[in-house]
Amino acid sequence: MRLILAVLFVTVAMTGLSRPATAATPAEQFIAENVQRGLTILNDKQLSKVERRTQFQEFLLSLTDIRLIADYTLGQYRRTATPDQLAAYETAFKDYALAVYQGYFSKYTGQTLQVVGSTPPDDDETIVKTVMVDPKKGGKPLEVDFRVLNRAGHFLVVDFSVEGVWIRELERSDFTSYLGQHGGNVSSLIQVLRNKTQQNG
Amino acid sequence: MAREGTVRVMGVAAVLAALLLSGCAAPTADNLANNDPYESTNRSIFALNMKLDRMALRPAAENYRDLVPEKARDSVRNVLDNLDLPVTFANDLLQGKPSRAAETTERFLLNSTYGIGGIFDVATRVGIGNHTEDFGQTLAVWGAGEGPYLVLPVLGPNPPRDAAGQLIDLMLDPTVYITFKQHLWWHLGRQYLKILDGRSRNLETLDDIERNSLDFYAATRSLYRQYREGQIRDGNPAPDQ
Image (cartoon, rainbow over all chains, first blue to last red; front, top):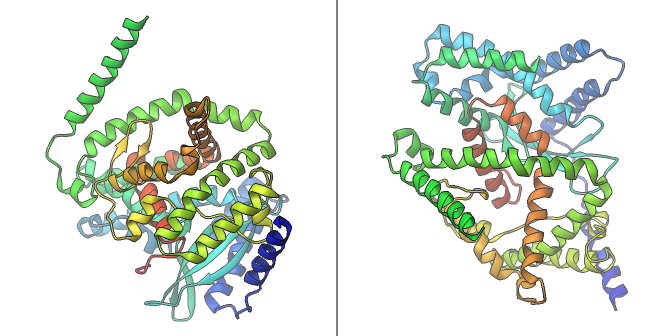
């Protein structure tokens, strides 16, 4: 009886898996090609530590709109910051983000990215859903999503999430809470970000 | 000896009372904006939890990761996951998701039999992946809000909706009704293993976030809320995203 049940379940499961393949959207293709390129840089054992960092940072800069992410993470404090502060903040954030994002992505070296779908574009933005598959391990693959902005046919990543946690949101909560406790002092935030960047270097 | 114990318990109670009273200051605009009216109390309990983590949980999780082979840890996790399936099944149904409930049943039957009590995750290999549901998520699907953010001693982030959900889940768990000798120890052991397993798998990630964040309390609050929101939507992006 159990055997029949098991065979039945396996059959159901297999038929469930064989969905008709749909053509990848341009945003999905963009993520599939580029993110794998980034993982390849992190995987490349031929590169020295410095070369790997430089290449990965160039890759991130070509793929993302870091300024847009920076402005988002300031939350309501963006309105009260002076233009000079804003410019300095954007630079400090860029250095910080390049350093810490490399750390986050280094965890996926040796893994393969598979695009599993995307949301219908809304306001020129779409979310491309992917999973990171570790060939050495079974179990549940990690869900990593990318928010992709279509700027006149040119795609840019403006946020990514791991298991439902979006990095841009996390940073905004973190930074605005810091600013709330430091009288909204953006210069102080800039200094702390610079220190964090140095610690990561 | 008993007297010492009583004194210690009274001491802990006094600290907790002081922590709760310290939170009675009027919430600021920032507190309200973050739906965290008891932020100062929450921060004190968060600091206490961080100390407990450094003293006990973290070293235990490191030892567990370093001393127990990965395959054995995976098996432990598989068994724990399998034991959670009846609760997931009940919540799948309560959320009106019969196809997910069927998936949960298939997983449970396959892993409990061919997976030898859940030690091997046979179901994932044939394409029936794991998902979890709890009563906190069910309440959210039914329309209940999270309530004010709360950090509880030892248990960590636990806003009212999720705390209430955990109590109901305990009642939904059939294993609770199986009585045998050492019944309570089995349950406590299972909960401890769940916490230990979870912590051991997040050692590096949480270290990274702590190192990179400016205000780890605020980062953790965002992490918890976003993770729960993702679970409630079954991994689908939010409508406004």
